[in-house]
Length: 331
Ligand code: SF4
Image (cartoon, rainbow, N blue to C red; front, side, top):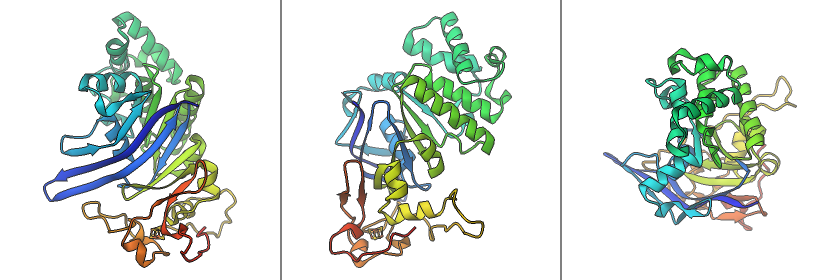
């Protein structure tokens, strides 16, 4: 598989009145063409900021630096604003959690979907309308002809999400980034939207980055997972490695807090005690140390190096040091 996206040492700080929020710290990862990658972590872990940094969608007070962000064989850190905008609209599509805030309330459904086609594909009005109708059919919106003339507030939450997916895939992007695409939807609609994304992934061969706090969503969609905590990637691996051979205590905690098919009725889900770190003043050393039952003195002083455990599996935890005490896997 060829490499579609490669990010090296991405750091994002927000300079706000009271100080500097260190939202993302030296994050490196890659994505191959046709691959689906899940990024999981609690709110504030840096997963959405990582993708917004890559897409150049952060406000001016964000300071984004990276050694390299290569997309489709081009270096994005060296692109002009115009080139960057072209890539963003044409080759990368984004699906956000709340379509109400990302769809323009003053535009009809037709305009929302047709605009990128006119701008990036040079279609005239009639061609863009025809393509928008086809896209609505593709995302299985009932009565698509009538929907073209409607405004976002006239649609249900599930339909708005389908419109946003149609707009995101309109230019046949090589990469679709979906940021919590099902969180605002009720459970049955969530399943339909995930089915739709899976179907689109298979039929278009686009790569997908799925950002979520829900490991269940990732298991149904992705082949590889990045686990983020406190602005760093604490573990990454294939779905099998993360679910069956996790090595980071935070990953253990995430897995303990989701229901299992084999769970007995009296078995309780175990939440992760404590709260995520304040990134205005992150703890020295491992950001998970204040919540980690295995924290050692070294954890409070130094960030653990990334230990490579296999071709696809790596983890940043001092427990992986050969001299660290052996602990039972916390699952
Ligand atoms: Fe826990 Fe230390 Fe590992 Fe951090 S580095 S997860 S504090 S054991």
